[in-house]
Image 1 (cartoon, rainbow, N blue to C red):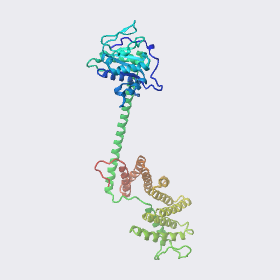
Image 2 (image 1 turned 30 degrees about the horizontal axis):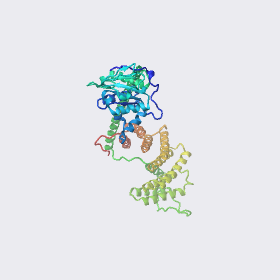
Image 3 (image 1 turned 180 degrees about the vertical axis):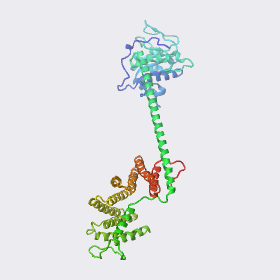
Image 4 (image 1 turned 45 degrees about the horizontal axis):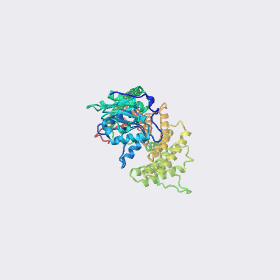
Amino acid sequence: MMIVSPVEQTTSPAIRPDTRAGVAYDAFISYSHALDKPIASALQSVIQTLGKPWWRRRVSRVFRDDTSLSATPGLWPSIEQALISSRFLLLLASPESAKSKWVAREVASWLEHKQSDTLLIGLTAGDLSWDEELSDFRQLANPSLPAVLRGQFKNEPLWIDLRDARAAGQVLGKTNQAFLSSCAGIIAAIRNLPKEDVLSEEVTQQRRNLMWARGAVLTLLLLTAAAIWQAHRATVAQHLAETQRDRAQRTLNQVVATADRSVLALSLRLQEDASRADRIDRPTPPIIPHEPGVDGPDHTLKDALEQTKRSTKLLANGEDVGALRFAEAAVAILEAGADRRSRDPGWQLARLGAYDQIAQVAVRMNDTSTASAALSTALNIAEKLAKDDPAEIKWQQGLAAFHQELGDLALNTNHLAEAEGHYTTALELRTNMVQMPDASSEARREQAVATERLGNLSMARKMPEQAARQYRESAAILEALVASNPSNTGFQRDLSVSYQHLADLSPQPVGWKKR
């Protein structure tokens, strides 16, 4: 295929694809459906996509009835409207199209509304011969142009030879270099560009598309490598978590209980110390809480401690109402003498224990407001005692314990910001006590517990990575304690709890069930 007789580019209107109102197509293809449909389809595809950037659907719009017409009751009005809104008419000339009434009608309509120099011809069969003297195509026995075109040209129009495209076995498209070269002549006229620029633009876009493709492949490779690395890290982390889970399971099988320490244990130890400091031999009479404004007998510290112990026993037996009554009786005794016994350590310790007992009973009864009020009062007492005697370690311990218990209450009622404040203060107090010269292993244990509580808070906030870091810090402290004192089952129990938290954060193998 070759261009037989193209006119100079200046003969075509100097117009690029029009964006003015009423112009919808860059070209309208008129052809005979009998034999030229494959050529028309391939020509439409090449015109629309030659030199197209990868992100655009097409660079030119071409009307071809098979692809552009929708179902309509009036076929000719739709075709005529498309003709009027097109800039060029591309006629696929052949003896078949010359005899087609539809092609003749389309050409006639074009000449009625447009100029003849916007009509481009692609010869698919037959012959064309231009007569310079007549300024028209010679009339042959079997013409390839419709009769309506006689005498319509002042100069020889642009026409290309596409007769080889009808040959059997031809693959039409941009991969067919001869077909592509012929199409480039038409595209050059439509886009008002030199033919070599059209082909050069296609090469440039192909190189650019290849560059983008290579970049996409490289990016994909990098992302794949990153995903493989992350998967490797996740596998290592999962293996570590599973190892820790197995260690926790073995430890849990060796210990009897898995309960946390509570502030109640501290308060009971403090109460016992106070009881030994103020022990007397006389029997304890029944105690009834004082009513406001009514004077009663002078009760002793032992009386108050006895009420607290009775409350503890009743709470253990599930008698919550009775436990609350005895705890309130203890508070009434201790508050009655609070002012004159303000510097009595045993008395103040008993006050802390009694308020803590009320909080324990209230929590059991789901009365969070009473529990919070009791713990807040105890916290205020502990803060005053710690401020008056900062060197006394037991006041610091009590202060940290009540912050921690208030944090537990806030966490259970979903007041997470309040819980964070109490847990953070408790950890700071525990850390300060660990840094003292004579710090005990129990102080380090309580530091691990305070760190674990922050991990529980992070879990409530759905921050598993931060929770895992805090659980690992707690486990590291407890591992050191177990290593220094292997016979201490309390340390082992606490360590198993930390391991269990870490195991809960790791993906569980199929068939493994949490105990």
